[in-house]
Image (cartoon, rainbow, N blue to C red; front, side, top):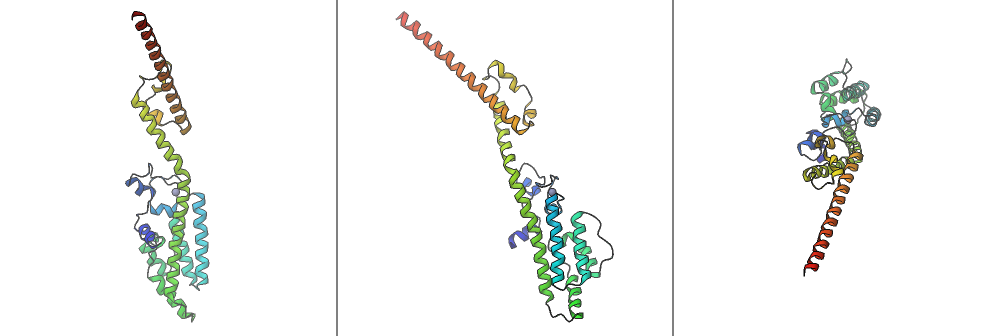
Length: 251
Ligand SMILES: [Zn+2]
């Protein structure tokens, strides 16, 4: 978890953009909503329905956790509304407490990635003191941090579940593209005359066909080549036969 956390916060998770750099995936699109150039911010900000539900329930849980830890109510409001506005890409509500202003200065993005402004702790320590609550503000902050990282991790896991559901089709499609290129390279010479039109379309257009049409195309080309091979073999056999007869007759 710690290793993952440091990778996530430095943006080196295997997100779409990163994977493109590593050339392991053909696309940097978000596997959940399809938005291009998926980065670590997008893992948390993805607007896809399930991602958003996951986020909304996390914000609800965050508020409950903070209430249970006897948190200053204005901190609960600032924290949950500030981070929620960042996630939805909308302007944050005005009127923060000093701790909220300090976090806004440090950016809410940083909070979502686990970088808390120290001002939260100071404000919460004052609140505990005023209410004669002996609870530890260090534990309070640690709980908060743990929850924020867990929230990010949940989104990451959900994103991977979706990715691995859709990935096999993409891998299969890449395999089809390799086969199609191979058939274009082999050319139309070994195709029977009636099937030569299969290679009429430019390569790029055939590569752009829907998955099942590509499959059908490959089957047609391979069957035609096989038919041509069989015909050629039969002609060769007939010729051999003929030669043998001629040879027998002349000997
Ligand atoms: Zn997305």
